[in-house]
Length: 406
Ligand code: FAD
Image 1: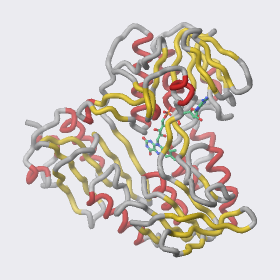
Image 2 (image 1 turned 60 degrees about the horizontal axis):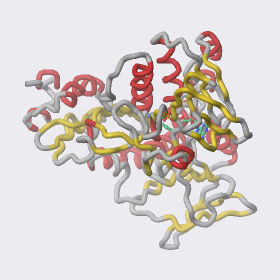
Image 3 (image 1 turned 90 degrees about the vertical axis):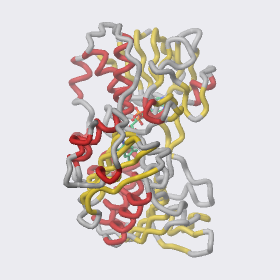
C-alpha cells in the first residue's frame, strides 16, 4: 500500500511526485503508467521529436536517476482497469491489486479516432504517445503525401514538420477555419495563409467520408463530396477522450472528464484528479466547468494537490498559458479567449509579429502572441487584473502593454 499512488505517468503525474518531494513529503510514492517509458514531455511529439531534432532522451521530464534518488517507485507498463474507492485500491490489467491512502488520477486522454470506414488501416495515426510518433516516423521514408485530419494545434504542428521534411501535406478541417475552437478569426486566417505559403494544401469545411486503402494500408482519404485525395500517411488530430472510465465506474461524478473542486478533489474520498482529465471550474473562464489540455494546467494542478498533501490549502487559480511552434512562428497564449466579445490586433500581421488581444465586457481576458514574447510577458498582468483598457490603446504597438495597467 502506497501513501500516494499516482495513476498516469505523464506531465501531471510526474509533476505531482516531483512537487511532493520538493515539499518534503516523506511518505511512499508510486507513479504508475501504461506507457513503457520514463515520464516524458508530450509537446515535442508534434514538434522537435517528430522533426528528428531532439532524441527521446532529451524529452524526458527527469533523467532516470532522479526517480530513484527521490524514492519514487516507478510502475511503468501497467494499466489501471478499476478503482475500489471504499477499499482504497486499484486493479491493473495484469490482475494486481495496489492499495493507496491517497490516489492521484492523472491519466490524460486518448486521441479521438475517426469512426468512418478505413479508420484502422495501417498508416492512420493519432498523435499522443511516443509509440504513436515512432510508428509514424518509421513509415515516413515511404511517404510522399500526408493528410492531416483536423486543423487544431497538433494537426497544424505536424503539418509544419512534415512540410519541412519534404512531404506534400494536405490539412482537412471540418469547420470553416482552423483553430476555430481556441482562437479568433484573425489568428486562424494568419495560420491558414502561412501554411498555404509553405505549400500545404489546406482545406476548410471538409467532411471526411472514409479512408481508402490497399492491402490493409491507407492510400488516401475520400471526402463527403466524393473527391479522393491520395496520401500514404493519415494523421488524425481531432481531440481527445479523457481517460476516466475506471473512476466514473467507481462512482466519481463526471462525464467529459472527472469533476474536481478547487483543490482537485473528486467526489470520491482521498481521490484527486489533475491535468487533461480533470473538469474544474476555472476562474479564467468565468467559473465555467472546463478541462484544459495544457502542460501549465497539468503542472499547476499537480502542485495544488502536492501543497494540500503537505499542509497548504491553496485553491487552484493559475493563469492559463500555452504555446505552439509552427515553422519559425512561436505562438504564446495567456488567458482563455472563450466567450470574447471583442478583439484587437496589435502589431503587423504582415511582419509576422503581432498579438491578438481578446476582451469581454471591455476587460482583457486573453492574448495570442505570435513572435511577440514581450506582449505575452506584459499582457499576462492585464489578464490577471482583467484590466479595462481602451481598445485603441491596446492596438497601438508603440505603447508597451505594461504601461496600460490602470
Ligand atoms: P498525459 O501527459 O497524457 O499523461 C497521462 C498518462 O496516463 C499517459 O501516459 C497515459 O498513457 C496514462 N494512462 C491513461 N490511462 C491510464 C490507465 N488507466 N492506467 C495507467 N496509465 C494510464 N500542451 C502545451 O501546453 N503546449 C504544447 O505545445 C502542447 N503540445 C502538445 C503536442 C502533442 C502532440 C500532444 C499530444 C499534447 C500537447 N500538449 C501541449 C498538451 C499536453 O501535453 C497535455 O496537456 C499534458 O500532457 C497533460 O498532462 P496529463 O498528465 O493530464 O496527461
